[in-house]
Amino acid sequence: MGPNREVPLSVELDAAVHVRPYAGSPRGGDLGVIRALDDGALVALVDAVGHGLTAYAAAQIARLTLLATQRDQPDEVLAELHEALKGSVGAAAAVARLRRGHFSFAGIGNVAGWCAGQRLLVRDGVLGQRFRAPRVSEYEIVTGQWLILNTDGVSYAGAAQPAGEAATVARALVERAGKAHDDAAVLAARWVERAP
Image 1: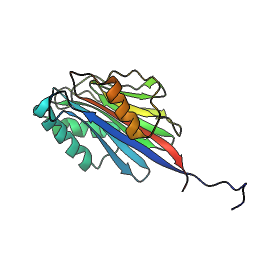
Image 2 (image 1 turned 120 degrees about the horizontal axis):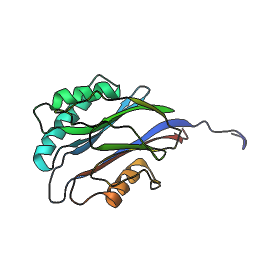
Image 3 (image 1 turned 120 degrees about the vertical axis):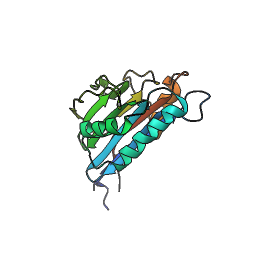
């Protein structure tokens, strides 16, 4: 190959979740799910109400629901989570449907989403208990730009993210901004260009 020939780049999703349970608890109620789809991914971050094993049980219901769902629109996924969590302590959740260049987002409860320093729209409520129809918002996302989802156990306000791969970013945010008295979780996702 000559020196002036460009190497074609492929675009891939770099995404990871880091979760730290409440201090002294072997299990917590925060979790994240990343599901690859043909044209992108479905990502979700869940924060079950409370701590410990009760919250963990609700989070596992949410995890199984997210892994089994055939839906890929954030509002439909949240409605399915609400039905599955009835009878449990309930949970908050943020769901994004990522496609190259843009994503759809909706959230219910005490979770946050951020992209390019902008806070994403989340409605009040508790899945499984008090459910208001979620509002889906559409956002652009350029290659290399982070989508960050965090539970309320992380004090994060959309500032610049640490450098590195998604796993490094998610871990660093939990370690740096995680609250000692709560479960803490961050999901970090971005599109990246890689040489084949």
